[in-house]
Amino acid sequence: MAIKEILRMGNPDLLKISAPVEKFNDKDLDVLIQDMIETMKANDGAGLAAPQIGIFKRVVIFGFESNDRYPDAEEVPFTVLINPIIKPKGQKKVNDWEGCLSVPGLRGVVPRYDSIYYEGYDEQGTKIERDVDGFHARVVQHECDHLDGILYPMMIEDFRYFGFHDEIFKE
Image (cartoon, rainbow, N blue to C red):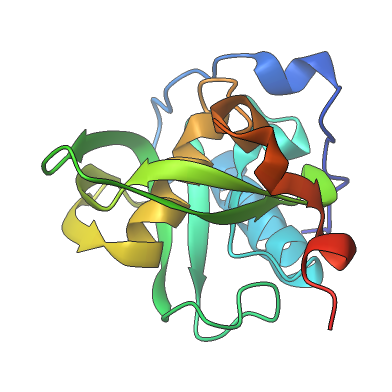
């Protein structure tokens, strides 16, 4: 297990579409997940997608009790989510600030569905199904976008609300 280098925006690999995981309860999958956990924690992330460390499989992790990068965010339970499917619950979208470990130092306002249903599997192949809203829904949508080669700046509608974190949130 190791802390991996995170690919940054501009790397063309981040635009790839990831392949589904076909084998659960697998040593290689376990190593990938442990590497993702260590990498996310070392970088104070709220979530991480496998493509961000150069592995193009449909695996995301997310969750935290508290996070310095998102001090006002509610707790999100730690989750390993494999081969996710997301369905919006209604049409309501909410604009809020996002950052990304692949876009270091920058923040942007992104519209996301406020309430979603998601499903997928954990590393043993056990089905996960949840209805969530708020920041939890935002994190899931953000991380799952990586699996389809989408970075949050591609989702920004008004670039007046995109810039360096230190400039936007000056004390």
